[in-house]
Image (cartoon, rainbow, N blue to C red; front, top):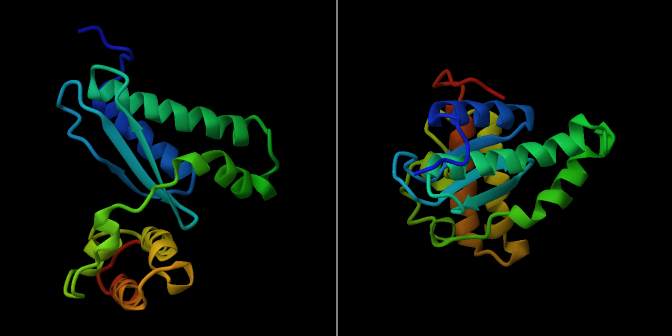
Length: 179
């Protein structure tokens, strides 16, 4: 099979983490086993309390699909930030406008917080060793679905809030880096 891009999976993944750092994004998740041929790839990340999801299945190789997503995000970011299309003080507003088409829509896993016995990192959808900014971003993103003011169930929001408070209380005790 002819590949679209020549980069290895390791390089694409490394480049993605670097880009997410530049974007001040957290909770990068690549939702596909990159080793499977011809499989679609889903990339999810949080930024400023918004959860974004990009999907690609245009190429026969999963790594190529991941690289296509990387280039899409990188080129949009470059046009906005590096090329000076927008000034720094309005970058966040323009970023949200441009990327609004990629906002994640709630799925069943987001809507079902369980009985309140799940670990805080499972409720927030972050890794157990997540940074403080990842926890805050995840809470803000999930609050948009679960907050009673936006049509969410008050009991579910309390479960979410409890998980968030547990996370903040345990982060320093676990020696997890902040920010």
